Length: 255
Length: 291
Image 1 (cartoon, rainbow over the protein chains, first blue to last red):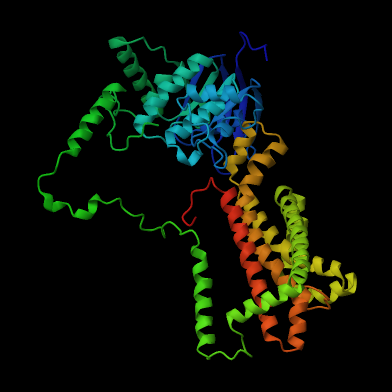
Image 2 (cartoon, chains in turn orange, red):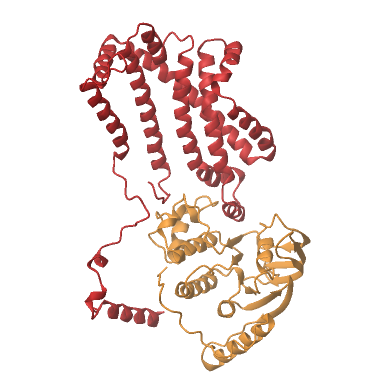
């Protein structure tokens, strides 16, 4: 566990995957440094989920080759919270972990769910369920966190809250993160580096490097967004909303 | 975040202002809307209504003399005769024997059904071997097995318990097996990512996930056990409720026959209620329409 110091947390070499029906990967090389936050962007069908599932070692249906080197302590967050409905929140967090009930309580408090240990998953809102999933991932103290569009099913306001929460948790626990998303702004706000996948190949690898605040930050975001739009082939739409308009407040859930 | 929540509270305050033309609002809009697609919350002993109505109908027919007591005695005759049989000690004795048979057969059948379902649901080879066999067994009525059972096991208790177990294990197997195969693949993936051992996977995912199906199977199994009991107790039995009824039939004691019938009904209804109670207890995490 200790040998991960300066060497990458994640190393992928010549990774190839194919399915009879869906996505393919074609010779992916990717390194993620310890504590680095990498966002994996791409259109649907570009293979981003395929890559994540390969790293999570749950792509049994795929055929392929290549080398993957991963830390032993690894957690996965899915788009759905994927809680076991017959277990209370605390037991869901502790699934597959022995002892550590006190620690699980602390992590639940950290994600803002103190006192909800005894709740059933169906009693929670979508955002709260995803918080439980975050707690379940963090209680294992992962060296690598794999997240497959974890906020895709949440409403816009909850998503903003979850972005802040994830950023805070990652800063506190320092795992390497690979976040699969199709949301360019999400990728820019959260990640240190954006990797773009196109038709199963790595199409771009861009550092985010946002300045702290103000005009410079907004300018860098606009520039990066324009670059990403061009690379993704969605030109001429991005120029106006440099600052994303607040979403309509119809469905507010303080998850 | 703060700015947004403030905006929202302002918007809410504005919503609460009375709306000028009151005509647009009907008075019923103030009520909490009933969930119209759901049958509503069940009353505590609601399932007793049907049996109660039948009893009422039967009583009226008996009291008015429409029903000849030689065809079917009145409900209260069942009670008085039952009381008499209890005083003589015969009813308890037969009941104990019958319940013992049914419970043993049920226990063995449930154990076999569950074990086979697990084997067949969790291993491919097990599925190939077991599932086809059970489907064939399912097609053979229990009555058709009786001659062979007698040939192989004699006419004693072993044959009776075996027949009951044979009747019970099929519904338990089928429902548990179905539930096992319906376990959400996403939960299996989750189990892999949190690195559950095979045993933890069984305990935390497979067993709770297939429990609803198992309990449905158990309900059918319990009913099957009483059904099979009635059949086997007509065969050379020297004790048990079925024997008591057969004997009464020979002497044309319709009231004793009726007591036997009522006891079977009570046993069936009671044990089913017991399983349903178990269901409610164990599946408290579910949110369903008809709880």
